[in-house]
Image 1 (cartoon, rainbow over the protein chains, first blue to last red):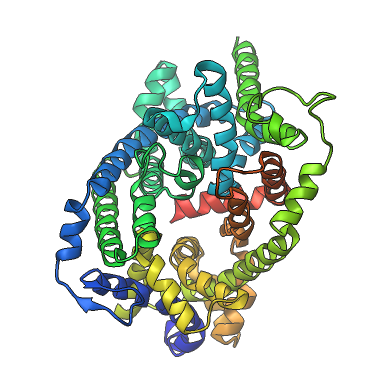
Image 2: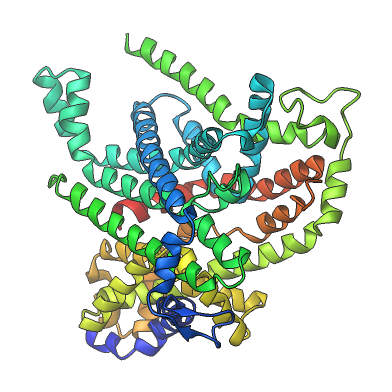
Length: 282
Length: 254
C-alpha cells in the first residue's frame, strides 16, 4: 500500500507542510538570523554580530532576574502539581461513586484561557491579601510568585490527573492481585508496583508541567504583569516587553527569545532522557 | 471497613471539588455587584445595596463589543479546529504509513516545533503574516494550521500507530484509492476533539477592559469573565468524554 500512497504526497502532506513552513519554519529561521542584527521592521536589518546577546545579559539585569524567577517558579510548580495530581488520580481510581463527576470538575479549569484565569485569581488573591494584610498582590514579589504557582496548579492539576488515571488503569490487574496475595500493604503496592509501572505517565506529566511552567505567559501578564517593578516577570513576559515596550531593542528581544528557546529545548531533552531511563517494560 | 474509607474519601473529594470550583462562583457572584463594591469585599454575597442586576453585562458587552469578538472567536475556533483535524490527520497518516527519510525528518520537525516557545517566532510570524496578507480571520486559520500542526500531527501519529495496518490493506485490495481508504477507514475512527484549546479572541478583548490610567471597571470585567467562560463550560460538558479521551490518547499513545 505504501507504494501507491507514496505518490499522494501533494494531497496528504503538502497543505499542512505549506502552512507549517509559512507560520513556523520561515519565522523560526528568520528569528535566528534577526537575533544577530539590529532592526525595526525586518527589512532594515543590519548585522551586529553577537552584540544583541551581550546586551541581553549586560544592558540591565532584567533578563537574568526573569530567568532566576522562572527557574524557581518551574521547580516549585512541577513538584507541587505532580504531588497533588498523583494522589488525586489514586483516589479517583478506587471505584468510588461519582468518580466521573469528580474528574469532570477537576479538569474544568484547564479549558479556561490563561488571561481569564489570571483575572479570576487576581480578584481572589487580592481579596484575601486585602482582608489579611491590607495590601494587594503588587505589594511584594513573594505574593506574585505564590499567586502564579496557585494559578498554574489550578489549571494543570486536572490535566495531569487525567493522564495519571489513564496510567493507573493501564496497569495489569494481575500485578496488584499478585502483590495482595503476597501480603503487600497498600503503600508497598503503590511504591513497588504503581509508581514503577507509571513511569511513562510520570515522564509525560513532568515534561508537560515543566515546559508549560517555563513558557508561562498569559497568566503572568494578567495576574501581575511583572509588578512590583518587573520583579515577578517571567522569561516570556520579559521578552514580550523587550520587543514591544522598548524601541530599538527588537534585536535584543529576538536574541533573548533564542536563548529562551535553547533553554527550553535543553531542559526538555535532559528531562526526557532522565525519566525515560527509569521506565520499565510492561 | 472498605466502604467506610470510601465514604470518607467521598466526603473529602466533595469538599475539594467545592474549593476547586469556588473561584468560578466567586466571579459569577461578583458580576452582579456594583463596580465599587467588588475589590473591597469579593467574598460577600451581593445585598440590596450592592446588587446591580445585569448592568455590568450591558456595560461590558458595549465596551469591548463583545458580540463582535464572540463572532470572531467562534469563527476562528470552529474554522481552525476543522481545518487542523482535516489536514493534519491526513499528514499524520501519510508520514506514519510511508517510511522514508523525508517522512521521518518531517515527523521530527513537527515534534521539534512543539517545544519552541511562541516568543521565538512571535515577531517574525506577525511580519510574515502581514506581508502575505494573512492578517484576517481566514488567514489566521491558516496560521493556526501551521502553528498547531506540530502538536496534532504528533498526537494523530501516535493514534494511527495503534491501528492495525491490515484493515487499511483490505480496503486497498478491494480497489480503494489511498484517499478513499483514508476517509472511509482511518478518518472515522480518529478522536476528533484532540484540539480543543484554541479559544483566544474573547480573552484578548477582555484584556482591553484592563484599561490604562488605573481606571478599570471591575463590574464589567467580572461580567465579561463570566461570559467568556460560559461557552467553554457548555462545550466541555457536552463533549467531555471525547475531550478527556483526547487528552489521554495524546499523552499515553503519543
